Image 1 (cartoon, one colour):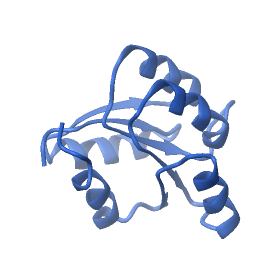
Image 2 (cartoon, one colour):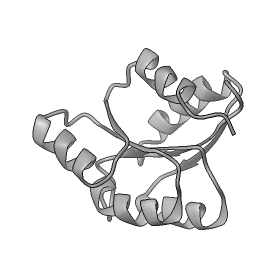
Image 3 (cartoon, rainbow, N blue to C red):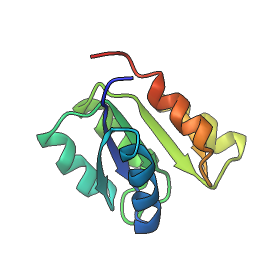
Image 4 (cartoon, rainbow, N blue to C red):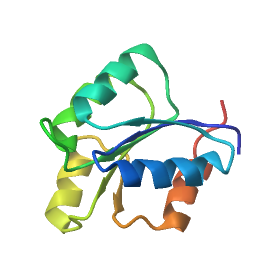
Length: 120
């Protein structure tokens, strides 16, 4: 797997830190954002290979931000949430999410998503 640029959007700083450490230890470049609004600003100025987007955020939710993010990046966007009911998952996929990661994150699932990214 080549080095990937990954944007992690989560208002819970410990979650961003843990995901960043895990992915950085595998050689990836990770940028954190604490809100959807901050992530949209970051996406306007940088390109990423993957976006991990929390569903529950202050202000704009992950679902509300998804379509705006898709207009700014071709990167796959995977939503993350502790809300793992079928309706939430189906809503995310219907709005264009590439996938849905239940929280707490399964590390094998996270690594599989990163490893499946196309080579640049």
